[in-house]
Length: 508
Image (cartoon, rainbow, N blue to C red; front, side, top):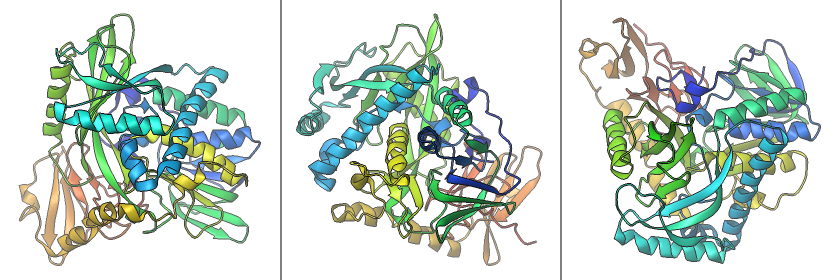
């Protein structure tokens, strides 16, 4: 199982059937094994298959139903942390490499969907970054100057098209962005990978990844081994390290709603505002009578809030204020992004390894980063140079981002101290059906959940990755770890990396 087992269902999940794949039950050999079947993992598998490599893809749950199925699906070369800030932290050269890689990612998606004849609703369109208030116009001024200095000369001042709220929103227009249906595109990649000899296995949790001589050995929960020349770990947050990369990124929950708007009411484009956390908007075509308006925002650090109904309500209020033609949301869902401390993803060789590669730190650009990552990892796995690899290397240390590093890493010691505090309730008898919470029993802190039938589910509240205390997520009915982003089912089964072991059964 993976995050597809969490309670909410995205628009994407509701409109594309789950791809059926069998679990791995024997040992396997391949040139490359890819762990994780989202946009990053499957794009990498596709690129390597096209280069004649034998590839095995495994996922702990259903193929393509991880965080890629929970995105808002913007395809953009716009940086949500802003290019002027990136230049200040990483310098102009690396910012330019980032921009070039993101443009190449959009081009690659367009090429693949066209050449492979994928019906995935792909379209090139404009993106609009608009000031949330007059005070934010100066931010846009800094951003357009930064974009032009990087060669992104097409970025221009404009007025946001078709604003329904009557406001005159000064904004920046970013031409040649994109959108698609992510799971239709994923389905197309799967068909191509299988056509080219790739093997995909669902419901196959991985428990270890190691180098042994010239081989990389990936072991499954049921005892099988996959031996390969190289391994790519594309699991949202890497499962193969305890701490090396995890201290340099932080998990954030994001929220998305989708409601109907009459066709032609809202201009088909990508939209972002300048708030923090910011709002992001796009359309998904649905037929002659209506489109889906998709609105995201209300982000917070994973495990640090359990007020999701209020967040969905605020998101709906904001959406209807800006787009009055939108009906009540028919879909609402959440996802998780990994925020790197210096704004760029970690893509390349895992620190300390030669033939184990990772792709993580997607921030708000998970789709474009996943595709850019596939182009970088294709070259690195095949021993080729890649002009963008230096900007993304996982072993980098960004001194200029030290403040952000320290701030994000305060979560872990604060969380570990929770092992010494009381529970959220004095007794599990306080739990109503459908509720969860933390309770202390002697020296142990327990994760308690009462299902709709009244049965109590008790597990240790200690995350099996690094020992932090998990917190209840009432919206998804799962346990979230605030430290590094692991999720667990109500029965303690891991749903999202980096943890791969279940929460311990509580001792009676």
